[in-house]
Structures are given as C-alpha cells and as structure tokens.
Figure 1 (cartoon, helix red, strand yellow):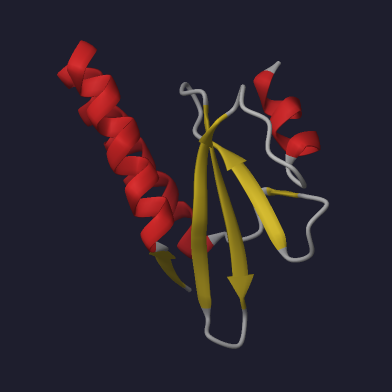
Figure 2 (spheres, helix red, strand yellow):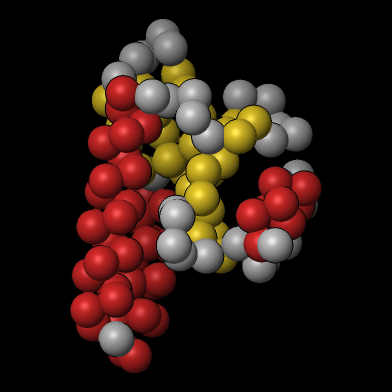
Length: 104
C-alpha cells in the first residue's frame, strides 16, 4: 500500500517539528525520522494501529513520543491516509477514548 499525509496532517507535523526544534533541534529531527519509519511500516502493515470508535479510522502511537497518528485504510485505492497528528494528552471528540488510552 501507498501511505500519504493529508494537508492537515502535514501542517500539524510541521507545527510539532517547529515547536520541538525551538528547544531541541536534534530531538525534532529524530521525531521526524520516527514518523517516516512509521509511515513505511504502515505501508506494509496498515492494520497495526488500534481501531477507534469512528468507522474505518485507526490510531497508532509514535513510540517514545507522545503523539498519535490517526489514519484510514482505503483498500480500493490501495492507500493509507494519515489525516491527523495530535499530542496524546489532548482530547478530541470521537477520538477521546483512543487518545486517553495512549496518554497513560
């Protein structure tokens, strides 16, 4: 499968990167490498994330980092689309249950 990032997810990753880079450029770079690594894994194993209460939406934690990637698997397009990246401590309607599970 092919993995893509929505414009929204790209903006969110950019904001996260800029924020972390202000404090620790090396950590920001390492985080982005982890994101790239996870995207490659999702291409081969798109169902490794946990299902959410939303239909066809899965979530995967960025191990070692407090961020969650929310994505959809589109088998017709043979694509995984990451559409949201958020800090695990944040609450979001519809995803609250999943984000709380990773914030512990």
